[in-house]
Length: 207
Length: 207
Image 1 (cartoon, rainbow over the protein chains, first blue to last red):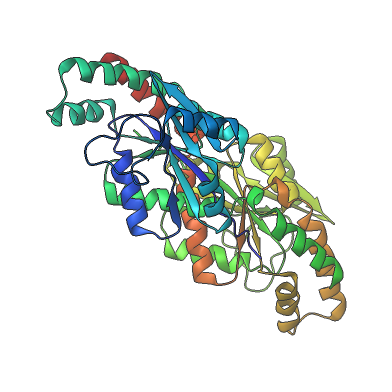
Image 2: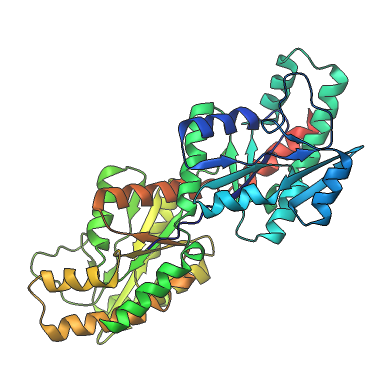
């Protein structure tokens, strides 16, 4: 029998690479995924719902989760905590779902260290120019914000080599399909099929 | 720009796993593959053609190829040499084709050592019982041959952990599609896209 457990997948990428839309598309088009929801202590923004965008928690609640080792990873930005609750992820993996965490590189590497089987995927626009054009095109960002985003992208690009796959988001539909195909292929990795190999080896000797 | 070079792929598997038919199907259904043809000093069998099943060479010719380093790998079985001519493989890779070598495990590991980017795929039937049934079902093999094939399969299974992917050949069409999907996904490996990463990094700094 093949391994039935799901794969833990971390998706990172440049701000402006279209990760959010891509994840939505992936969840829409295929039914073997579960998207992990982060917990945070920051205030909900207008339109955000507890348990949909984030689990909104108080600082005290969040620190209890840390103390009880209930988070796969967490980080503190400015005044707020962000983290990935463990229970939901583990339940979904056991149920055979491939679970996607959308987190940035530091978090990604922490997860990989703790769970070496984690698949790391990095989403990029086809070129830096396209990234800039997208940010400018939104029309909502000041020149300074765009500039700081581009600088941040330079930093973000430093970690790419630690990732397993690089996915170019040139077209939403095509890119979602490609990610799905990569993840499906990963299920066939020899390292993810130790049980099957043990079984066939035993059976071969007995026949 | 994405890496345009092809991937070198070694396909191995149990005798009776259906590798040959699978490779034919893959070549038929997709046009980005080139199948490497081995050179050998053994006599052509009835129906075999030089340059189709094998390049048939004399022992002297073969040893010249060895001396000139014209083979990616070679081995000697009983009285005959078998090897993979380098030139055709390299030409096809440069032209962007994914090149498939169908060789056994010792050869596979030699290729991987020489070309670490090589993708190793192992083809297996769904179970040892299916493998035995297929051998029995052919109706052309004696009990002894079947027995020796099963023993050989035990040996062949010892190297599986060195491979990258394990592909279960339960259905020809499905399996060929799965292999194709895995190989396509491999083109997105971060390690195969160093040039793209360098380029976007440079561009990000300049914009």
